[in-house]
Length: 155
Image (tube, rainbow, N blue to C red; front, side, top):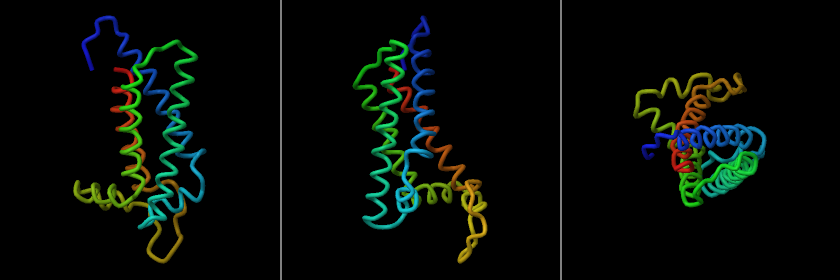
């Protein structure tokens, strides 16, 4: 975020981004419970609570990854920058995982067909896989925001 001829900020950003990306993969695919995965996109409080629980464990996993990074490398991060970065990550993760906002964004950008790509047809379970447009857009959304979060964490 600031000019740094020594490259320290760039190196810190790279290390933080990798830590957040690894934490994202672990939290989204290993830490998240089946209940959270099944319910986080549902309407009403059931969906909100499941999504909030997922985002809480997701953010805790990211925080733990940053602690391991700091302990393993001696990297110094500003606690306020980390708090802002993790907040950005948590809020944007919640938005995407509630499903409707991301579907609406995709539709507004002309990507509704891609969002629906690979989804089971109504009333059928004929493509139970991760290979959907919704999943690809979800993951790219998360990774894009991890980039922004890492900028704040490493500032």
